[in-house]
Length: 208
Image 1: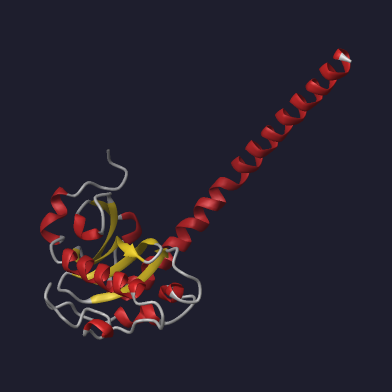
Image 2 (image 1 turned 180 degrees about the vertical axis):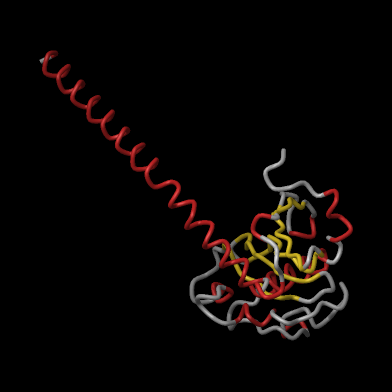
């Protein structure tokens, strides 16, 4: 019986080693392709919030780390800078709406440095299907309402859902989610106005 168990153990060990080796081989053969596809998808996302006609630099590779509570938490957020003939003209900035109905909502906000929103997309959310998840572009067109809007000041009363006296629609049965997104986009856009004066001191992505 011990001999049988020993043989089975050796067989299982060989099988595990082969499986591990095969997994490593598949990973090594596909990792470059996976990374390339991820980069392409990220470029598409950036172009949705900052139209490519506005800039002429490699925005995806001009990345800085920003830490400010206005972005929803004290974690570093990535900022992608858009330039035209060398001059900073806009940016796409990661932001967090910490007060979603089902937790934090992750956003990518594109805006210039004068309070004009160029585009917004949700990159991660856990809101209620059929209600709060309408903030996603693949589910409804609600998120497109931000494009072309301008934040006049931190006291701009129009930057609220209609239930709170603003100009943005809420969802039937789900006001908390759109309210959280509207507030986060407003805070992020106002913060972006301060970015040009900070550029020389912002660490690049990848720096310790």
